[in-house]
Length: 178
Image (tube, rainbow, N blue to C red; front, side, top):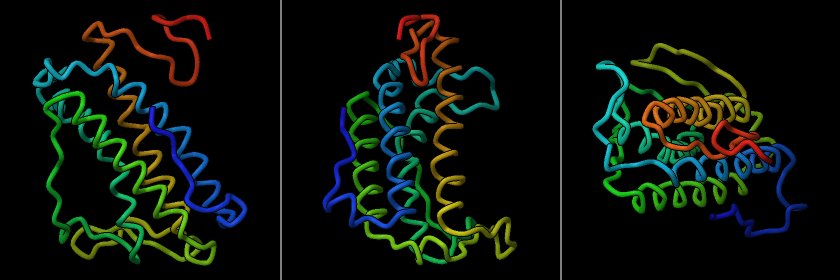
């Protein structure tokens, strides 16, 4: 498992960034455990015709932390961004994408000051503002909690496919002892 490694002493990382990094470390490790069991040979499977395929959802989870780059500016407008979804073909590609994005995200956050994280950041579509929040709150909600949301979806997909679920926050039916 790849851990988030600091390039400078923890005491040198501003308080808000340190809190985000701690959450990133916990959630990315939990996410990796889940990605390790995704059967991409069943990648085309969908629980419903309107749902993403297993490969699309797992790939979205793996690429999720790449969105940290959007927080470098004052906001993001989904109508003007050039987004090409990542799609893993193998578990190795899936894990490599996740690990790469965790490392890049952690490195970027370490350089953020509390002043920077307290500035407002907006999310919009075609100039219509959907939300404006302090950057540290937006980072947690739109990036980290978004990751947790899709990871939860992925656990449902895996359960429906009969894949034993690893412990994320505690025991599962498949691994009942902590």
